[in-house]
Image (cartoon, rainbow, N blue to C red; front, side, top):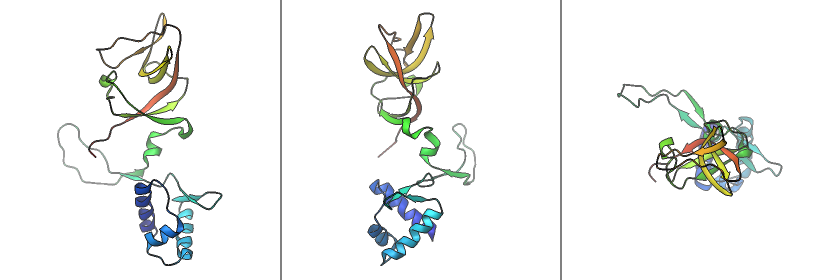
Length: 190
């Protein structure tokens, strides 16, 4: 029964981008009293599905919004395979290392298409000034921001596009890394 309530909260959160109030949960769960809702909420808190803030409002935990991981899929020759749930994960858990330092940017332009990043994609980046050579970075070069590979030669650091149509970018005065790309997000369909 608790899984049904968690599933209802998942659907509500997915639709409204917020947790429901106790009154909304009463309707959601088909209860007539907020007392019954409070008992379910306590069970959800005990199960680790939600937490309460200092005002008693609900907030999702890392267990919230889990997605099933079913297994592997051939990208080559088709192969017979039975569906088997391997685990569950949240996209946050899978993609984000440091929540406070992470943010998403929408990509404009085609200079990174050979790196698999095309216009309209979103990149999940982590704010840092430390990057390794070869990382795809968000960097400020002479006052303008761009997304490129971080490279180095005998003259110093420079940025390399992931598209042969474009030239490398060598800073005239200064360059600094603001973030490193951790993931590319592309949505298909509507």
